[in-house]
Figure (cartoon, rainbow, N blue to C red):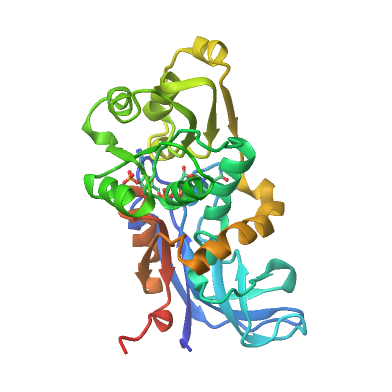
Length: 340
Ligand SMILES: NC(=O)c1ccc[n+]([C@@H]2O[C@H](COP(=O)([O-])OP(=O)(O)OC[C@H]3O[C@@H](n4cnc5c(N)ncnc54)[C@H](OP(=O)(O)O)[C@@H]3O)[C@@H](O)[C@H]2O)c1
């Protein structure tokens, strides 16, 4: 067990892209749990694009010089409540810190499935996978054989969307990503039919090349030019699943995408956004769908794992720059598998 606790604070509001200077690591003694609570030593942390949104000076955002929130998995190391046993592994939202004092109501017990690693509860079985699953089944209402375009296809939501779409018997699956290497990975490993690097030219042209006959569903993690191009590529009764707008999180003044609004009417397009927090009731269904495939090997986890809590800010900034493939997760060094 570590001797001191570390907690990340945000220290300033970014204008545009954040840097490590917007954060600090506060050192303290390890907290004592009050009656009714327990002390958790965190083992895995999720850093997410929505944290960038919370960095802005807006209602509900991160307070400066205060602990941040984030999804985390940890082990109970001291307990003053019968509802949390020492040694138990729990999920909670007091992330961005090595140690957290939590109450039972703030935690979720994780079901354990043979052969499924803990990281899966932050990636494919966690909020990231749930977002992909809800997007396909509840918002797109994907039908067998339908063709999809997915933006930020190499990220956590994008890889899960691709793998789930394959298991749900989608038709042609195309995507966009930030590098040629990611495009190759998505086609070879994840099951995409064709992927373009969105830096290679106007997205309208690049999308037209990989999906000349159009698509039925657009799963949008990015917004901006990719959204505009997808409206043009959608077929009649097309659906746009609005998941995120990461192309704008670091460019607050960016102009809204321009597209032909008449397309929405003339092609009977439905555009619907959602927040995964409103679909927690689908969690058990995700387990029932994904776990057997994980166990049989038909479904693989896409994760970029960064070792050492001291790298959590770098991991977050790297994710915003596109350094991850699949879900980015920070892992405590005690969880690194030994070489033997
Ligand atoms: N609605 C919800 O409830 C919900 C839940 C989870 C996530 N989300 C949203 O879903 C999206 C994906 O989240 P995630 O957790 O899976 O993150 P992620 O895709 O694993 O990571 C972010 C990725 O975005 C890409 N990116 C960064 N700047 C970009 C830009 N200007 N244009 C295009 N792509 C850019 C980068 O990949 P490249 O190398 O490809 O650029 C980066 O790897 C985000 O917009 C997030 O806010 C929404």
